Structure formats: C-alpha cells, structure tokens
Length: 446
Ligand SMILES: Cc1cc2nc3c(=O)[nH]c(=O)nc-3n(C[C@H](O)[C@H](O)[C@H](O)COP(=O)(O)OP(=O)(O)OC[C@H]3O[C@@H](n4cnc5c(N)ncnc54)[C@H](O)[C@@H]3O)c2cc1C
Image (cartoon, rainbow, N blue to C red; front, side, top):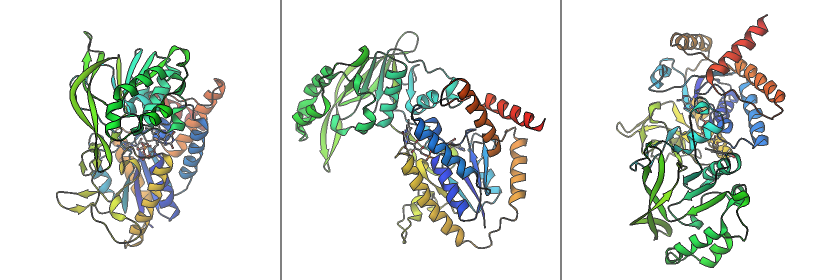
C-alpha cells in the first residue's frame, strides 16, 4: 500500500483517484479550486443541468471513499506556497498531475492586450462563476468576434446570443465550412441566429478557394445554408478563410476592430491547410474572444515545450503505453520517476469528460502497475504525512478545504438554490465560500 498524490480534481483527477484508491492505496488530492469538478463544474454550459448533476454525484462518490483525502483551495506550482518540490519532500510513492490545461493561448498579434480581448476559457470560467473570474470585468459590447470554430465557440456564442442577447457574433475561421470542429448537435442551440443570406454570400465569396481544393460548393451550400431568417434580430455570421493579424483599439484602449488576413487553402498530405494571401480586411467589433484551445500551465514545474508537458517519446512494450503518461526531461533524456500526467494535462483541450475519464482510467492502470512493482511501500506514515502537510499549508497561510467542508458548502448552496427556485446556486468568491463553511462548522458545534 502506498500514498499517492493527485494534483487537480477535475474529471481526470477524480477518476484517477478512484482507480488508485480501489487498488487499495491512500490518495491525497490537491485542488486549486475550492470545489472539485474542474471544467465539469466551471466549463460545461450552465444549463446542462442533468449532465452537471450526474457528474457531481459521481465525483461525490469518489470523495466518499475512506482512502481518498481532499485538500481543496491548494494550488500547486512555482508561484504558490506549495510547489512540486515541496510535494516531493513528502516522498509520495507516485504523483499524478491532472491539472487540466490552464495556460491560455494567444495569437501573438499586435494590439491583443486591448481591453475586450479575452480567452474563451477565462470567459467560460466567468459565466460559470469560478472565482476569481466570476467577479472580474468581462464587458462585452454588442458585436463580438469569436476566433475558432469548435464546440467552445458554440458555447460562447450560445451565451452571448441567448443569455447576453448581443446583436451580432462573427465567427472568424482560418479555413472553410467543412473544416468546422464543432458538432452539429451542439450547433443547434445557435443555429436559429444564423444569417443564412450572409452565409450564402460568404460561401460564394470563398467558392474559388474551396473548388481549388476539390470541395463541392453545391453540397456545402446545401449543408450550411437554410432558408430561415435570424431569430429575434440577433445575428450569427461566419468569416471563413481569415486569420486575425491585428486588434485595432479606440481612444479608450478598447477593441474597435479586428484586422484579418485572407487565406487560400492548399492540400498537404490530403489535408487542407490555410495560407495567407497578404490581403487584409477590417471587421468592426467591440470584443474579441479566442476559442482556439488552451495550453498546459508551464508554472507547474513539469518539463514543458510548445504548450504541452513533454512525455516520454519512447514506445515501450506492453499493452499499456506507460511512456505516454510519463513526463520526460528532454535535456537529461530521463523520465521523472514516479510522476504521471493524465486528462487535459496530457492532451490539452482534447475531448469531452468521457475522454478525460477514459484517459485517467487507462493511465491509472499504468500507475497501479508501477506501484505494484515498487518495493517497500507502506502507508504506515500516512497520517503523519497528512499532519505534516496540514502544518506546512497552515504555516503558509493556506486555508485547506476538506471533503467534509465541501459537503457543508454544497448543502448551503443547495438550500440557497431552493430558496431562489433555481436548480443551481454558486457562491462567487473564495472568501464567501470559506465564510459559509466556517459558519456551518460553527453551527454544527453549537
Ligand atoms: C467551454 C467548455 C465546455 C465543455 N463542455 C463539455 C460538455 O458539454 N460535455 C463534456 O462531456 N465535456 C465538455 N467539456 C470538456 C470537459 O470539460 C473536459 O473534457 C474535462 O473537464 C477535462 O478534465 P481534466 O480533469 O483533464 O481537466 P479540468 O476539468 O480542467 O480540471 C483540472 C483541475 O485541476 C485543478 N488545477 C488547475 N491548476 C492547478 C494547480 N496548479 N494546482 C492544483 N490544482 C490545479 C483545477 O482546479 C481543476 O479542478 C467542455 C470543456 C470546455 C472548455
């Protein structure tokens, strides 16, 4: 039996913890956010209540395991009191990093520091009420460009059109309609706002480029153009074959327009690739949101290159690809013994919860096998380790949130939701959550 640290309590970390605990090991989870769930709690669209409630139940089941310990409100990494090195001093038998992909990607173009340029993840955290994003200013305006055309773009456009009721969302995409990365079933929620006349004109505008790579205009028009008018005067349009090159600001330093370079498409190894033409045009907007995927957080302290944690490039024998889960230092050409990555920390921004779950579960077969082959493991000193950890965190001014605290917080939030006649209620600051937990604890002791 061994003590394993799991860093990050999103779907990957929680399902990883379950597998390790079921193999009989003690698991200590460290999570940046007070509440568990990661993007399942703070990313998935707010009205997907059935999915969110179902996942919360599964997560609560994991946390209820007696050999799973939860330290919420404890971020790990270079800028925090507890680093990877600090954790190493406690000599866990293994550490699993499932911290998601917290680094944001930008395009590196002039003007992108202007007010009104946001990363989709930050905006999604904001409307899903994750502190501190929940209370930060994400003012929007009336015309928003969303860069990228995956499911996250659909979520953000859904929020802007259906909830914020803004006038116009313009999706800016490097390639054409066929290269969309969103699912049609997800798109249905924003389809009523699609300006079909504009879509028809847009397809006509780019038709020569689509034909040049062998695409069929009639088929594309049939699939992407309907004969309906945009609902309630709100519009959704697409600017295809365009790569943003500059954000233009107004006198107050706020976004006034996006400059984009027009592209052609070429075929490379059978795939369409966008190539700039040098010709630019201006799209008047008051906000730009990047929905182009995220990168992992380099400050965690694992080997990092080009937006991902570096994993062992070797193909190792056996059914389980151990190498894919092992961080690897390209300078020393050595794996980091006893350290593993899973979920979006391994494959940034790839896949739904089910994919993160599967990745964690497969990865934990690797971890459990690693633990089975390690000699001299003992959980005898587990309690002492936990005491020492609590001591260290407390000395560093960190208020740890335990799984019992989470139950108190959730019951307070559910009461509040019932009082407000809604299915969900969330406190929007860490201080308020800590205050509610403290009040519930005090009331219990009376
Ligand atoms: C906008 C959006 C909408 C989505 N909608 C859906 C959907 O409808 N259905 C679906 O199935 N999937 C959806 N997904 C995908 C799903 O959210 C992911 O597949 C899944 O959450 C990835 O899990 P993860 O555990 O790897 O990462 P995350 O969910 O990001 O979890 C990471 C965890 O690590 C913690 N953490 C971060 N940094 C640190 C640190 N330094 N120290 C300690 N802890 C840390 C965080 O607090 C968090 O709890 C959506 C994703 C996004 C972005």
